[in-house]
Length: 307
Image (tube, rainbow, N blue to C red; front, side):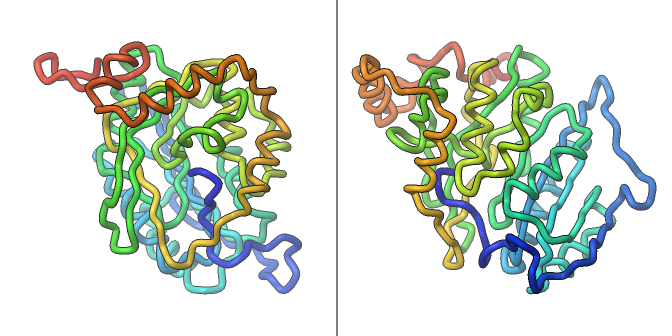
């Protein structure tokens, strides 16, 4: 996502007038824990939600219908009172773990999910957004065949009817531009719904700091990851962001302010390179592919693999 956060009404900040009881369910509560295996690495997917009854089911279905079979799905609910919890409970026999209790916002909820994740690979998707059915299969294929620590795909957007209304192939995400807060401010953003990473990157994140964000928590993750590894791109549909009528957009001023609180100072000598990157983004895909051979994976039909 860019500075638009998926929220449905405001999430509870203090817990006043919110439910105080913690509710839990899912496969873990019945003693069933999925494990990592050499041939099928475990992938953990997390959804944070608060009052998303109109959208959560489609997101859940996009996870449980994945062609990849070793997925651990965790849902963190902020104490919804609109029927969201009833929908989550309906999938209690396929969701690995869900919890419903008050929290301090989106990133607090996500941090809870990451703290109990067992997967070798991780990703999160908010209520309303969803994955392509082969998203995790594609991602794991690339992780296993190549020395990649984090990966993103095509940028995909849906409308209220779940129709794809826009997609594009990222041209390149440079580490130095991620570190200086360029993407989502001066250039196209890194789509969170289409990004997945190796769990080893989590140790580079200050999770207490992550919880404190209100708008730019996703970018903070990218900032931390970029200190270790380049972001690779796959020419495939991983996940997408849905525009809908109940969306509440965060203040972009806050988004930029939060990024500036941790990003490095932008080197203005790099403006020509930034302008070049922006121009390339609008060029045909075959040019983007030629200019980003190092960090772009394309499916080779003859070899039947991502190269």
